[in-house]
Length: 312
Length: 247
Image 1 (tube, rainbow over the protein chains, first blue to last red):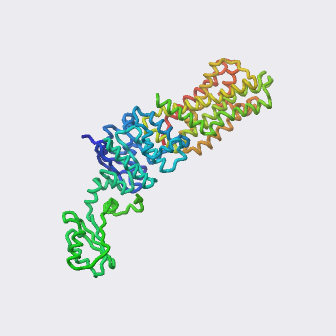
Image 2 (spheres, one colour):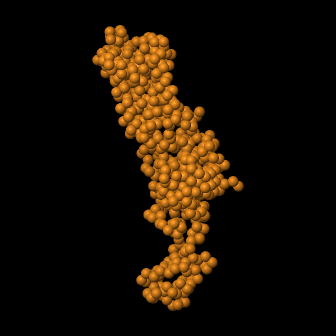
Image 3 (spheres, rainbow over the protein chains, first blue to last red):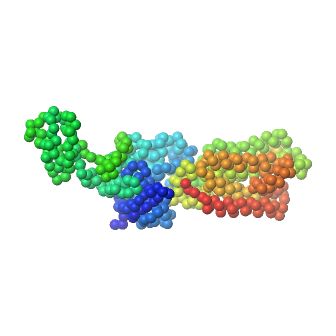
């Protein structure tokens, strides 16, 4: 089947600054595709090129079989777009915004229901300027979904929302996918990408550094399990290093941290516990940690996404 | 078509919710009419060739509304829509750019027309205003003047970096023009030197055309005004369609 989005070798610079430096990927019908990376990585430029708002310097883009620049008019009714920076007139009321935007499409959903799903029903007579940041964000998501588009672009969809509102929107996005629609989203929240996306493209400094399902990205890490425990026994490093799958051991006073890749050996934690018990070594506070996309980003770029972990 | 009507209707509501715009279009000209009407009445005056102050003020204030809606209304609305990203949001919908622009023109035209209607009604009822012209001719002149000034507004909006600048520049252009064109004060009270200068202001030509047709003079007496305003209109459309920016 033809991909919904096909981007080949996209380049885009603003003056001296290279925002996108040769990105290629495909998005399949019915998937939630996430693009993650720090601010300034080139996510918004890429999404705006696909939306037909910007033209790439080089490369090819095909969206729903159309060229976003030359066939913009045919493409518009098929796309639902939530822009990162957008606004409505200050005095426009919520219901007027939906009513007006609905009239721009030949076919549209019942927007009262959409308002309800997004928890905006009570705000239907409120002017745009009196909405909170989160309410504005939800209204823009409603405008993007209003006409039941084939392909939805959501740029930083839950920025500024509280954890509960984020979960509501995640559910709504999943529901849209259930109806066979395709979603392309950008986020700098790794937990959002991990929870919501079928596949994730990680971009950094305008380049695609990885593209796979969240589980596979994590699975491919050199270290995908950490076992931490405390013991009064001195230096257990040598013993731990000998266990199958263990890559590295850190000793911090009483605390031992075992890093390993469990692939093919069964969980590292089993080996660690067995070794400790067999050796008659007493231990306490044992726990395991699984890496997340944050660790994937760190291992791929050598940098932390830093402070961008969300609170959800 | 449904999109056009819905968009235009929404813009009308928004215009009326914005107190400053509605004040200068609808109320301020009426206040001027009542203020000067109460001072001078509408008795025939030699300075105005036997017409009264109200008889000449109503077409002149109509020109004032045209200047205000074009140079302030269109200009500030478009500049702030662009600055705030309202145009950006409209652009990603299937609404065509021409619908957005013509919707703006229709709204501002209707508001200008409403402002004029209020003046005419007040002039007629309160001061027994005289109207000796041809209704069709005056209507055409009103449309021509309005469209020329709206096109100027679009030209200004396309070069303004933001709404704040649009407002300041708009005021700097509009206010001297209101006083020097005969729109706010009758040209007859200006000294000869200023009157010569005022010929270079496009609004003067709206005032002259409307005042002339109002009292029954013919198009043939006003070829200069018509050509100037047509020129402004054509140039305005040309420049603003080249310079228009979504963001």
